[in-house]
Image (cartoon, rainbow, N blue to C red; front, side, top):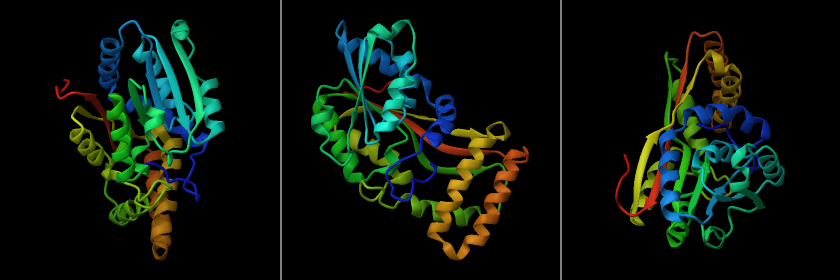
Length: 285
């Protein structure tokens, strides 16, 4: 589960995005980037590929994919936050391949029409986005990708698993409260939360995509103390917003859970999946 959005439901802070980046990168299903690279090479040949990073934020997905996709790519980063986009361009990985990778960023409201922005794309990618949107948004998104015959690579989508290595009596209460918080409207309709992977797979199937799904779970222990503290504090606040009568119990739960991870007495797995969809019906791997 992701830390909740700010009160207006619209933005993540750069600090949180930076904090989670290393965990996102080490947890991803690395083979899917390889499949996507092979697909782009076969589809595009000598021409430049067009890759759109939707909800690009501060550029974590770009930094992960750029050295793995190779080839000659025009990157188009779309996000509603200009400051985060500026950081994404500024912090893009440098290397010998830079002459082959052109990066452009555009402020874009995800509530707007998707088809015009995705036209001409060879690959559309997003990371940690789909749980924030509605089923209707996913349907429009995949319709736009299918019209462009673009491949789709969606990374780090929560799937509802939240598993500590020990049991606390308040775990179930917090999970239920978080599920309700995840379903609140973040500005793009009733959010899918942990249902996002299933909704995406159904939409891809309807449009004839070949789908590959692989786990990208976060594994958090004492070496990730700062991330654990921020994550569980975010869960605490989200759970209290849904169950204010249980605020004291939830605060106690959060204190114990943070202490358990920081001291090494406990560890945490947060379930995520990565999903690759390729036009056609032949599965990969």
